[in-house]
Length: 300
Length: 234
Image (spheres, each protein chain N blue to C red):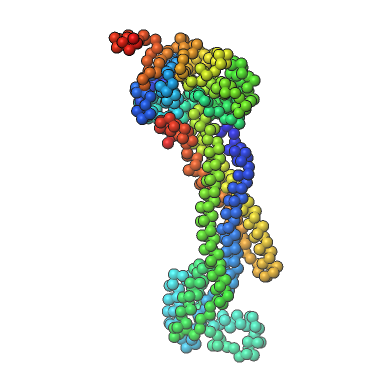
């Protein structure tokens, strides 16, 4: 009230800078994990879109049996859709890619093309893992000739992306708690440093809300600052990874989602700061003094 | 806030846990000068704390301008506090701030920071202490700190000014100047309540009380000499 809410932060410059960077460091861990998870998930997902689990049926299987199996697979909650692999469509695809002359010279006919279906999972990335497990079990059926599943490498990549996501989620929860505690300690230190000012203000009629507002503003602004620092560091990191993957690995990562995640960090920092400040903004410093006189405080 | 009601009314104040006050009742009318004296440890500071709303009394009722404090919420208590200028001994001041900044605090809380500078400067001039204006509190002597506390309490002419044991600790010259400041506020309609061990030079212009054995006695009422008292005196 007497001075701006950030005046105390400026006076305690070293403490403020350390808090901002410590909080940024804590926030950087989940941002790093989620950025990597999102980037790898996008790459794996692109791959899996082209390699969905396929089920090939015996040549002598009847249409009714095909329909029944497709209906059964489609009824699984993990499966979004089942699309039939039509022999004629397969032959056309072969002709288009290899050339009509080559296909004719090889003597490939419509009857030689496999009958089967392709399974599309409900959840794009993690859903693939569940669907692969379910579809691989179909190989034991008599009417099924073979089951084509994404390669072991792609499954490992999916597993890695899933682990990244789990780690990102876990570290995000931990980071929110740690950064909240860090911010609380910082704001408490500032509040205690200006306890005498609060006592005087309260004595002359300042309300609890008036006394607590600077703490809330500090929490929001310092949290925002920590989020901005996190964003800058993460942006440099992501740009480097993007360039590295493009030049050395030849993979074009879809980083749009990762950028969106990173843009949210200042808001998340601000939210955590405000949340940490909320209980502190309701405390009453004058209560400590009046207790020494054996009188109850007014604002308990 | 009722205009016709006393600015401060205390009924049956008791502090059984910490002793001192056994039964204190007092009405302070608007624009009245009241002085309460008593020996050390008789409970003056506790009564000051209760009357300036620094602490809630364990027993008894407080009414400020017709507003019963027991039925008032936090916001209401803050509103009532804005009607007071109070100074305890030693006064709580912001050490790293200047005298004028400390004096401006009540105006900031009341949302009147624009008029603060002029009013505070005029007050410092009246008390002949204008040279303190830009000095930080940490550079002040104890006497000057006490004077700053009293001037802050009187700044802006609040409806009630309460001072606890400060004036008697001041040198005669500075005390006279501050009494003049308080008299001026009193003449402009502020109620002034002073707590101390001796009455001030202006005490005869108002009501005087003695805090004894946990209750207030009117200093104007003569003490009846009973045979027991006479025997004790002998």
